[in-house]
Image (cartoon, rainbow, N blue to C red; front, side, top):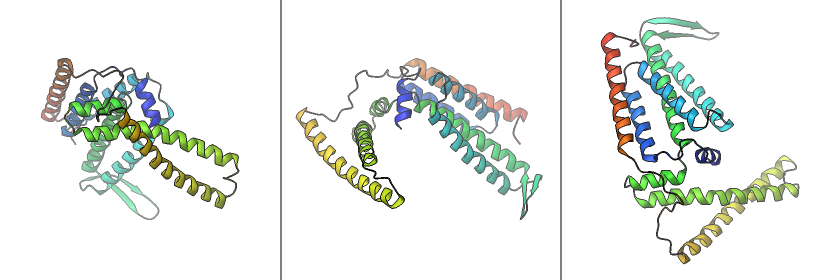
Length: 261
């Protein structure tokens, strides 16, 4: 979470309107899910990958690589299962030691469509996550008339998680200096004491911060040093034109029978 937030504050798209980015990302996701051709999810995948690369200055950090590899592994495994269980004319079979797996034409197309859709959705959502900090996202929820308690809770958890994370680091360093991690059983006892201490510290921190907020006349608002831009007509037009263009391209593909299986 902290690495993604750091990426968001360094993003090239930080100053873009959060609501505009959210509307555009939602447009791409809906267009990909409604498509009956592989071409539309592939276009969304290319657009999402380009936006993600631009957002992080085309320098993929380790956290993005880990997320992509884990997601791709699950997506590919799910696609193989879909291709194996979908009925149809068998076009490919694999003879394994204990059993035989057959892949039908409909199964391969369905698996390919699901896989590309999932990859496209992952890239566009990563673009939004790496370009929109949590406080900006909470401000966007307030503008969308989401109950302010939800946005306030999200902001509080985000802000005070840094304090707890720093406290956990100090506790770990103190335990390490006292040889608290020498041996497996000793390490388990140390981790148990650390978890107990973190629980107690979190309650104490919440009580102190609650008194501090009341003394400062806190009004349950999401306060930002620099408010993000609101959505403009340009974002609406870009989203509408993108959806209509992808929808028309899908209709053309369906009509001429391109990439339909």
